[in-house]
Length: 280
Image 1: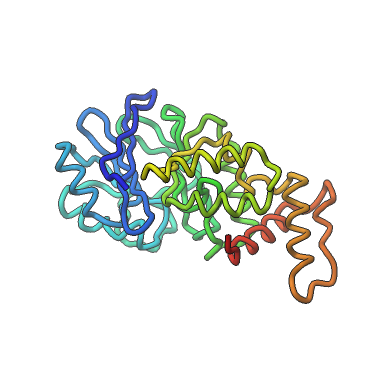
Image 2: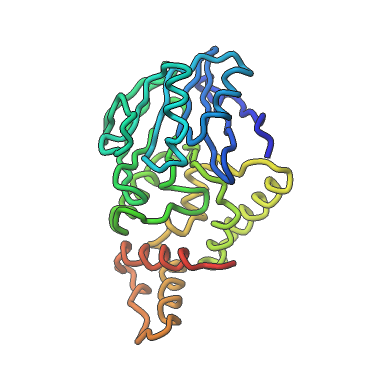
């Protein structure tokens, strides 16, 4: 993948570009008039290289949750640039200078970001929403075409977190932290094989990956139309979850997910468990 990929400036005049790290991580670099903010720097090296190449001043380091592939480069970046670190109130990572929770605000590159609590993947997970950028930086909670595994929280927490993100405007750019889109869309097609928007998205994703290009950011409207984890109220998703559970060894009968008043959290839990064991 081309580490020099650059994005067009947003309406707020901020350039946002991905810095590939490890096997499939994205560290997001926001740049405006020679100043930069970096989101989830699991590795310091690509950030240090980008800052040096563009002669940027690092104003802040932003963290969504405590996993090592999101905070592993923080200490080295602070040592090199002295930038303050913003992160979750409940984050066990000790290097957070400014601890944030739901509805807190932080100013980055002159723009206001609202903090959203989005636990589930981890209990400390937060996201950063900027109305001016029309962008949300959501770490490992919402992925393009998917969502993070529920490691520390509960399905109810994760479902509520995804609903909070899905309530953002449909034009919101979704900046997630991994290039998982191809695998996510393969699963989404298994859940909703008749979804025409999903078929179109899959074809476009394949074209991007064939050119070595990122499939992210996506748009919230596209996620609502194609991401099964945001579509647990849709009849096709409920039916697929019921059929999957009914086919499981030892299943007595399918749960009543087909009903219009089906428990959305239970549907989400079934779809997430299906994805955990899915092989395309």
